[in-house]
Amino acid sequence: MEQDGHRLLAPLRDVETATGGGVDLASAIRAGRRRRRGRSLAAVAMVVLITAGVTVFAGWTRNPADLPVAAAPGEFDVLTRELRVGSAAGFTPYAYQNTRFRQVVQLKRAGTADPATPAATVTLFPRGGLTETRGEAAPEVYGRSAVWLDPAEPGRVELGWQWGDGAWAVANVPATGDDPRTQAYRVAESVTTGVSDPVVVPFELPLPAGAPLAGVDQRYGASDRQPSTRLRYDERGAASDAISVGIRPADPGMTANTEINGRLSKVDDTSATILDLGGGVAAYASVDRPGRAPAALLRDLAASVRLN
Image (cartoon, rainbow, N blue to C red; front, side, top):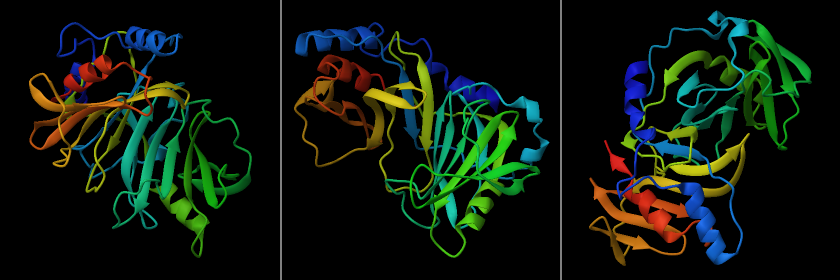
């Protein structure tokens, strides 16, 4: 399985874009900013958000208690998922987020459409990634120490437990219902850690030159939300100058104003969209406000997406 995952991810490494030579993302953005605002951007790394076609795992047999306590890494491999989360306490997972410094599973209410904001989350930190672990003692999770943490957001309950040597996981649920602490504990009990599942990507996205992969996030399962791939600068969770690139269901109401690689497309100040890449799927690249990246770069990034 691991070999298959890394084989499918091979197009994400050292590949030129479909429109010619490799796109130097950092240089292109620097050039665009000099033209627009007379200042430069030092570098842009990437986080790839990918949604669709992800395997839902069944028949899990490994218990977190089987993981040696000293096995927790100092940072994560973004191409490997170190946890699985089951359905528990009325919540079910619908999205995974992988970075070097945390892995987050977003959960929704069972039987509901994917929400804009998750109803609950499970966050896995590497060794030393979570330093504030003081709180009221909680029942052990799989025989390991646990505490009720002070949540940063009001109206929430957080249960933290040590899944490895100096490495913590946190279950966060709403402070509603008859017993939210029991809900948080049940969510924590559904977590399996140390599984090392390779991340499988349902499409090819050649990365521009000079832009290393910083993370992979996936949304999967029955969903009413459009799949997307997001590229951004990411330093321990702090995002800046985000560029989104990916696929989504084609919008029949979108009107083309140009072509990209011979396909009808729409390009404006903040996005470049190929209306139909095939199979009713659109490919796009976008920024959240004008001036963050030149139009030529957005066109090249949209053109680089290839369905498997």
